[in-house]
Length: 572
Image 1 (cartoon, rainbow, N blue to C red):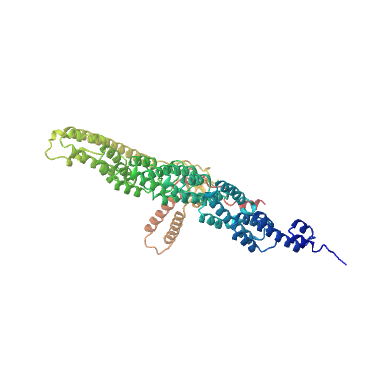
Image 2: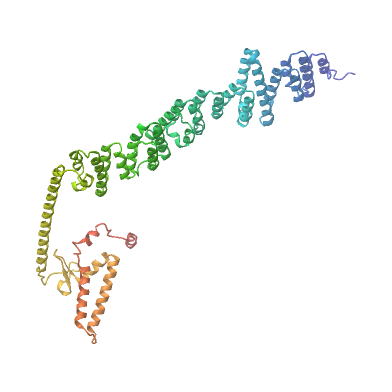
């Protein structure tokens, strides 16, 4: 009796290469189905239909290595590529290692085929390039690239495929690699375009000097476009290596932009610009220094360094300016005299110290007189330019053989000035004498002045009758008991004055005890001492009116209540 006669039908159909029927009779048996597919794939392989064989092999469980070797041995890279692509699509996302291996291998195969077809079949090369571009933009490849970017870059670089390497780095926004590739290829304009489009400052610091060497004007335009986002100090080390005229002019343009447009105050930038001005653009240096101002505390450059540069390069006007800034007045005037007498005169007029200013003008006078020994009148014109100089200051610089007639006018003018000053001083002395006489008269009047105190007069502090206790009367009319005045005045005095007052009062107490002691030798001496101590105490307490004097004025900004917390707690 035959039972389930169809159970081996799949095998019979497979042996007869009727694979569709064989698959139908597999009855969902994975093992049988796999055996049929392997036979079918091998059949297509034997017939030379490698692409179809690759498609079928990718659905089987046949060893991956065995299938790959079959295609490799017969040089069928297209079929191998299809097989790898299908196997890649069937991998799970957790199988990271297998995915990476397949992608790297497929990239390698694409690069090999593209390189081969570039010579033999340009049309096929374009097709492969489109396939490769599409492959590299798939999600699984992009995800793999995030962790294996360097491997893919190295692979492309080893094949010398700069086109795909540049395109890939651009797609993944790996601007550093893109710029590096362009630089390696000598495509500096393209590299600069990428540098301009991206926003990472560290790439500007790294590649701008390289691009500057080839494209100075264009690179500086990019740097200026970055504005305040860049720190120009970080570019200086690389820029220092570029010293040709075309580079220097562009560097100066950038430094001027940093200082005048972005307000950069870094000393390194200012010093570098001054150095370039000194070496290449001497005519711009003085103008730049003047725009920085004449207050040494406000400038952004090193004045001593700038002065060394100007002296080394013999830039005279800038040297004089910097010497004035550093208050090196004598060297400044001496330097100015060597090329511009008018500048020397302007320089000598700047110091506020009259002694120094006169010394500087004497330097100028000596130069003028030595240079115009034949024309005394012209040399003496300097007296009109500086009011500190007199004819007697200049005479030592003239020759002993000059005629006195040449100096007659100047000497007469000097004598007139002295006469005017003598008259002014005499008038001042007379005015002072009159003022002193008036003061003496007023003092005498004060000595003879008296005040009448009525019995009903009261102390301005306590309101009690004034005559009941010792009292003080001030010229303003205020009246105080001595003890009331002391209580009010002492808290307002300095600690040192209060301490002195206490000492005087103690000495007065001792003197009173000595006066009352029966064994005292000289009553007059003790009495005189007491009077002297009382006078000192009164000078402290009654030097000024309590209400009209400085004591009251000093209390204007004093608060009425000092301890608000205590007052607040008392009210609660």
